[in-house]
Image (cartoon, rainbow, N blue to C red; front, side, top):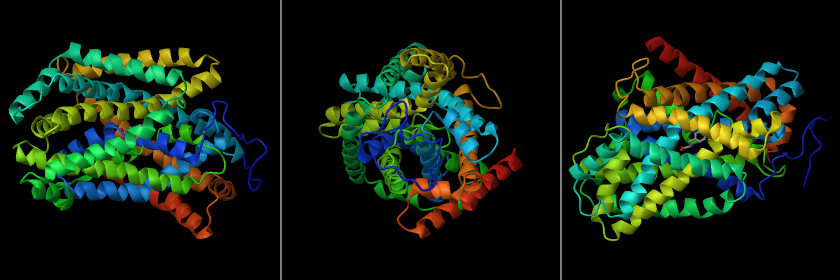
Length: 462
Ligand code: PHE
């Protein structure tokens, strides 16, 4: 292993106690697996629909480029330098920078955010799992939009069915994490991402064949800025964090398994690019179907479940493609869910000296329990409202819109203002000092200011 001496402090760990990725490609696969998930295929289309389309997409893309990529570079870099769970990494990097130990609470906030996100993420992944079953028995074949919508409503109205599939998904997540995120993951994602791309392109092809293709595209790409307010901008920014898995330590913990000689900047750009492409393809495939079938773009979390099965029900070979699509969606969700829980598990193993399996059981069970309340919020508890939101929307808002951007803001402040530039420069090891200057400028000024301004505006409207 190559080991640079410039800027490396005496206390710095060379490898992680949890092991390392076998190659640059393995890291790209794992981090892309974390980034690409329900956020791209389920969440991006429905929040775009709720927030009026094009203008929202532009704000989201701007956030990915100006805030997301610099913070992804920073978060990976902090992880690789600390080589421990985010809590311990932040504590040791704070010591190295002679800053306050309280920086470790940034790690804690991430662990809590990951826990809360996974609780509802698993319920939605459960919906996808139930759609694997429905595709298999041919529930969608030849059906029209209203029958497809009724199938979705039946699922929403059944707490038992949702909790059942949520439990299976949670169990699968725990089994993988107990074995260690690295074994199995590399091979799974290697096949997953390319196949997902192919299927999405196929769906885009189908959407193109409808008469509503142009309408779908113009909804997605012609901006009307009167459609968005401060809260929509916050949602777009929050989604940039969510979809890139930033601000809660997932990318930090994956970075901590990254061998020394790999370029963090290049890999971050590749991962963010692939993630954005998947989201845009999903949008391009879905909105023509929304308009062709007289559905509302603002239908909410059920949007993809009410549109895509119509396409599968009508295209030739649709049974197979539908089945494959929902299987891949579940796998994409799994490769993200394991990264949501990994920071907590790594911390329990490091600090409580308990076995990985036990750490997984503890975390898995508590996440599952919160998830049950989320499943109930779609039916029996649908009128339980806290701050004007049901349990699902509340958890989503607190985590994606508040905790992740706040976590990202703190990461940017730490990397830009607290960490010694010679340390970040040595860790990033960019081929050209101008690249470093650009990143340093974005992380020190642009990213924190942007997040701060959005927060201030939202507080202004509350
Ligand atoms: N990025 C994942 C997705 O888009 C979700 C996620 C968020 C994963 C935060 C890890 C951390 O589905």
